[in-house]
Each structure stands twice: as structure tokens, then as C-alpha cells.
Length: 385
Image (cartoon, rainbow, N blue to C red; front, side, top):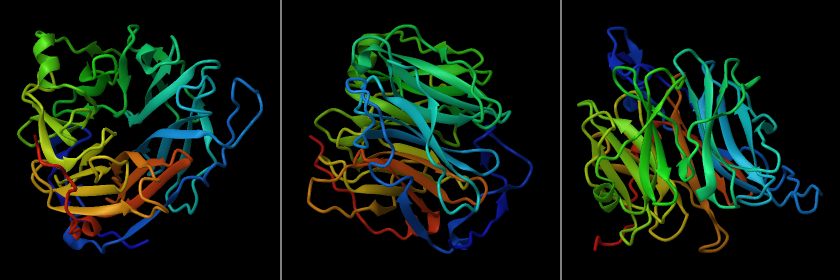
């Protein structure tokens, strides 16, 4: 792995949401040696699942919905849901970790399993006191995502043990995909989506989710009209305080959609298409310590392939560099490298991505901003209708 050079500057500290007078490392790309590496968390079809229908272990299982987080000691953790199929009753949360300096990910372990119920999307997040939280969904009704409830787990020992799951919302239909954003001032916004109505929704907390509030829509009809078929929002906060969300697009535009809040995520402007394509699949972005933004997505309006990263130097307004992260496929249309998660290490400034690799395993990509900034690819988009 290439060495990463560090620099210090007063920057927007995303953990506490304030510009500190202390020097913080921002890892400027001009001081980096470009590098990229990639691999798989575990070999394809190597983790057995036990279908409820047969009770017999099998290796042909579903691996999906991964999410990355860096733990306080620099360990990179990735969690996902795994079972016979999406929504199958044996589906459970598993996770793996890569310690600093380690050459291999740990063997996957069960993070949480409610026997007889299907677990789904999971998002990991580290609180200010070092506690590790996992937000996820469990299907309680019929075998459909629209009969899920959002739940939360908390660990005070980096995941060695977990407390009992807490139901965050009794009503069905709300789902989670990505973790909360710490705003300047310390409040948290948890991006969610309404599975039944296909619009973004949110929860808020000012105490690291000891308590929380649900978004209240003053004019639901107008909100649904302004954000149609847009789910799985991912958040950043700009220097001027605006909170910006990007969403996967279920409309004919086939573009990543973007919307802006000027009041800490309580109300939102009408969504508008970006210059990046979307094939109706999950995307995530993150603000780097130097203020630049990285978004990971599929650079195709129809396929979940290829997996691509884009760099923005103007807080997500435009994208100046694109690079393909994983473009090898045996046949056109035969590969699905999608549902990415992206995070930046605060230890060395490098960028980590995890993704669903053909539903057979979870893939990872590791690179730095200097490598991404050299990208010369272009967005594969359709004209906006």
C-alpha cells in the first residue's frame, strides 16, 4: 500500500460539526502518492446459510446491503444482510473487520439474528463517546419490505457485545440504508425512506439516539409531488450550513436526484437531477476532511455496473473527476456491482468502499483522493426529459 502524507489545517470537523481551533489532518491530494487496491471480503459463495424450508446448510446465499464504518482504533468494519434470498426468513446481519495493518478481513460473524424473521439494510455509526450503533430493519409482517420496522443496536465495546434491539418506529414502511449525519452544533439527522410511498424521510436526535423525533410533513401532498420515487437518501452538510441529500431515482430521468435543506434537514427544496446517472439503485456520498465530496454509484442509466467514484470540489454541485472502481465482467449485463457504501479513514485519509458483488459476496475498494482526482471518465447519462 502506498504511503499517505498528512497535513494539518483548521477544517470543518464533521464529527462535532464545528471548525476547531485545533489543527486537524485533512490529507490534501497534492501531497499523496496515488494508489488503488480492491478485493473481496470473503470468497464468493463461501458463507453458508440455512434455508428455513430445508434446514440444510447451503452456500448459494444472498449477500447484500453492506455498510462500512471506521471504528475508533482504525479498524474498518463492514456489515451486511445474508441468507438464502432477500427477505427470506433465515436472513440475518453479519459483519467482518479489517484491523490496521491486517492483510485479511476477519471471518464473518453474526451481528444480529431474530430467528424466523428477515433482517435487511444495516448502517453502522460511531457515536461521540465511541459507542457503535447499528441501524437496521426487520420484516415483522408478510415477506415484504413494506412491513418492516426500523431497529437499533448499541455496543459500548466496539461490537464485542450488543445491547437488546430497540424499535425506533412501530409503524411499518419506513426503512434505513445510510447512517446519520452530525450537523454543526451536534444534532443528528438520520436519513430514511418511505418504502410504501417511495419518498425520503428523516429522524432527528440531539443525544446520540438515546431519544429521537420523526420528521413531520406540513404538506405531505406537496412533499410527495416534489420528491417522487426517490429513496435511500445520503447526506452531507455544506460550509454554509445547508444539508444536501442525494437519492436513487425511480423515475424516467435515470439520474441521481439531489435536494437541499436550509433548516437543518427539517424541510427540503424540490429535488433536481444531477449530472450523474442512476439505474434505480443505491448510491452514497461522503464529505472528505478537506471539504471535497466523493460519491460512489453505477455509471449507467440501466445497469448496476460499472461501479464508479466521482469527485466534487464544490460541495457536490458538480463533479470534476470520475474513475471506474470495478469494471471487469464476463458478459455485458451479467454483473451487478452495486449498493455501495463509502467512508474516509480519519487515521490515514484513504477512502474505503464496500459493495454487493453479484450477490455472492461483498467486495471492497481502497484508494486515495489523488488516485480519484486523476480520473478522466465521463458520466453515461440520458438527456433529461
